[in-house]
Each structure stands twice: as structure tokens, then as C-alpha cells.
Length: 152
Image (tube, rainbow, N blue to C red; front, top):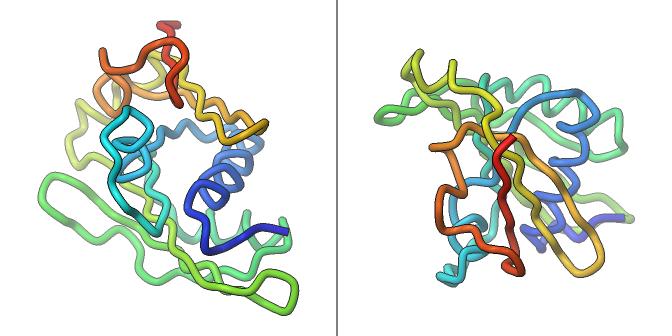
């Protein structure tokens, strides 16, 4: 059971699914900023991906027992493509949340895959992610923080 009101729980569940699907991703947005020590209230989970395929994520979530629907697919927002999946609660998992998949519109950024390994920690749960150097962590990750980063 997942608490849909907890964006960290949502991010960890989606991260596990993306790992199983061998889809490179990185924590992005408010959760990434908060993990680096600059608290920012956020309610959703944002993940940087090489291809923002909200339909594929909704399908992965569905196979994992989470009701999910595509809110929109590949909408251009500045220099990014955004796909959004809405997670819908049920009798066992009340609540509602969203996951935004963020893809850089630049071909050069999309080509800069998997240059680092990150770890997101939430209590005793750990999630790894492979990510392009400029998408997340950069130099602000440090050992012992919520996210740590090592070059591959």
C-alpha cells in the first residue's frame, strides 16, 4: 500500500518501476531541491527522463496495482517536454497525486545519458537512479545527505 499524499512514497514507487523497466531517470523538481537541503513544500513527484512517455508509466503503475491515468502526454513547456500521470486512490490507497515526467527538448541533453548514479533515501527505503550529469545532483550532493552521487 502506498500513501498517495506522500510525494516521497510516490517517487520511490515510480522509481522502483522505472528501474525494473530499465528506464533511466533522475529525481527532479521540489523533492530534489528538498533533498539537497533547501526545503520546498511539494505534493507531487517529478522525474527527469530521456523520453517522457506518460502512457508507458501509467501502464507500469497499472500492472503494479496502482490506478493511474494519463493527464497529458508530451506538452512543450519552455525547453522541456512534460508528461503527467495522475494516480488515483482506491479503497486500499486513498488519495490522489501526480507524477510529472520531464524530458529536455534539446537533442544534446537527451543524448547525455547515465553519467552518474544517485541514491534517494526515505527512512529505510533506498532508490537508485542513473541520470545525466546536468539533470539533477551536480556538485550539491554530498555523502550523508538525502541524495548522494557518484560518477559512473
